Picture 1 (cartoon, rainbow, N blue to C red):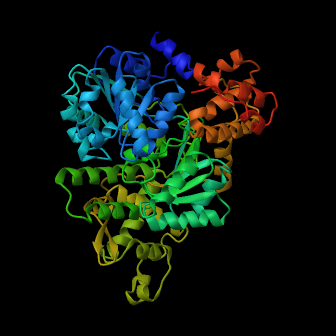
Picture 2: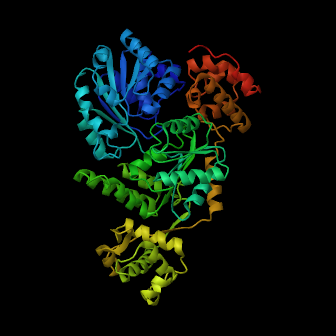
Picture 3: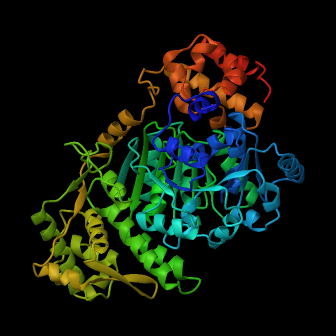
Length: 621
């Protein structure tokens, strides 16, 4: 069986995605590989397909303990003899997995790095091992955004199996991180397969944060009944946002490390199994999530790095269909990230340098009036070539954020910098905003700041714009914040003084489109009305098929995406196949799934109720 035949029979796809075939062939030929593919780019197939070829055992090292059982279920749906060994596994399941491993029937085995480093598995896997795949490989790098010390010890294990190919996989790695992965995992002249990082199906938006709860609710209301994730910086913010969404009638749960384990598990299970529309969460929620039809991700606070943002926002639209990613920015988020990183003690010099670089880069992404797709792509070392109208899929290129002319930006910047200069760095950003827009209180009058020439100089621009410009000037290094007592003080930098003197350039942007127009543009792009073939889908049938999928998933005890992705359901709703042969031609319907679920889906396509169709017995697994 060739890789192409395995792909068609096991997974129901007629062709590989970019770089998948090269990764598979490298593994089958015994060559090491470094695979960097964007979220949704099909990394798991790169090591699952070699396991399906019958050559031996593939060992997958992954930190995603919460997700391993779902990954095993998905692999088994493709006909693989898959197991996982991790700390959450019950004794019976662990015993069965050990027996299959000892009998030599296991084709694909997931383990956590901690579990592998114990060392007792090494003898059991040695004879049959053909490939060791290290998933989330960026965790090995000090320069990465999710460094894990245990990953640094994996090279010890890899050296025990010199004949097995090594494959390091990640969705987010700059060229520097790629080099570090290669060195730390001791990859041997690896084939470097780096996909283009752009996610063309995602609409990126970054706006100044004015009314966090209201802005989040606006996005959620654009996607009624669809799956979404709202990330916030602190547990308190998560609880407040979740409560506000529930009060507004949104099906929402909170998720953070301060909640009981059972409550977290229930929120995750309900979301993955589509019993819950929205999860408001800290970054504790994420790496264990594999719901393919997340239609939007909102960052109510600025994440810690571009890498974090790429990975977290990338949980939207993993099925390749349009989705929306919104970031609400405030420079105060960067101050809090810095404080949180250092509160437990001084950072090692290399981690401190990495943190400062990461904060500068995410601040630039969020505040600069530049195409968001371009900024993300170039951050990861790739070139971005957009048409004459830009990407047509971000707030800047859609005209929702307007870039000021050079002269306008310089004049506005000088007004803001002058106010910071004249207040001598003794006040916070809120005070300087009040000064700029002419809002005098007793303290300002006592300081005689209401008599300054800069008092009210940005009255026409408004409070939100003045605050946004301060944040943008902080990101560009013309202003800075300094900790003093209970709140940070705002002061002008040397670069800011030089800009006021005519040296240097500055870029500033302002929101430019009313929210109702922005909503209309999002709706027209994110409506999931077509299948992969481009044919229009019957929306009523699509919802009926989604209902059937949920019922089957409940009966099988697996997440709905394991049965079929939304893209396959859309194709069914567009083509309306009437026979098993025709249904087998739908992308994502492999031989095993066709045999197990084909009859039920044909009944629903013919007009039968999901409940009646789900009652059809599935073929044995």
